[in-house]
Image (cartoon, rainbow, N blue to C red):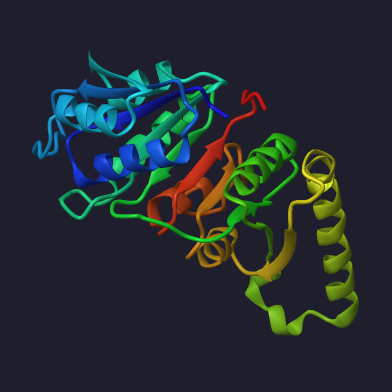
Length: 267
């Protein structure tokens, strides 16, 4: 449980959703920092002052320390600098008020790349969902990602859905013979066994579902997490031959919150 939570603030509906999610997700947090960064460009028209937002949180949660912090400089660098292995950074996803589609999520991705702790991106207007989806993309940092996802599922008293995508060469899934399918299934099960082993030890009563789906990892994960409470991914996931990395695509298009977990996260 992160005792300190940093929320990026720009006065938008997406930022308000991020703050609301951060408070609801972290009832035991000791401190929330509402951080407004003046980058001198790409500013969203202010709809709400950060002091007003902080005052509303204090009124509803008087035991929670809420501080407004104002900084200048590059947004991604400033927010990443406030991160740590024991701190959760929460950012608003793409909002309808943005003219430059994807700008906010691109900034969030820069925070993810520079952060020393987990970063959550919350779509504007998101309220609730069921189950925590764990993206099992590869073995890199899989233990810390799986344990973080399991802790989130246990906190919510919901299932952990572990999802792994397999892709056939040239996308010709129907031409894969039975032997190849069996080998593919065995490899996926071995990966699940390895990744989920620490979850069984740490959360023996947690319901865990395994799903192996054919398709591009980003498409599979977005479909699996469409109505989820949270999608949890590692930071250093595979980069496709063309297009965005899986993490960036998920942050940009997901209808559910996405939490990205770097290797430095302390469990």
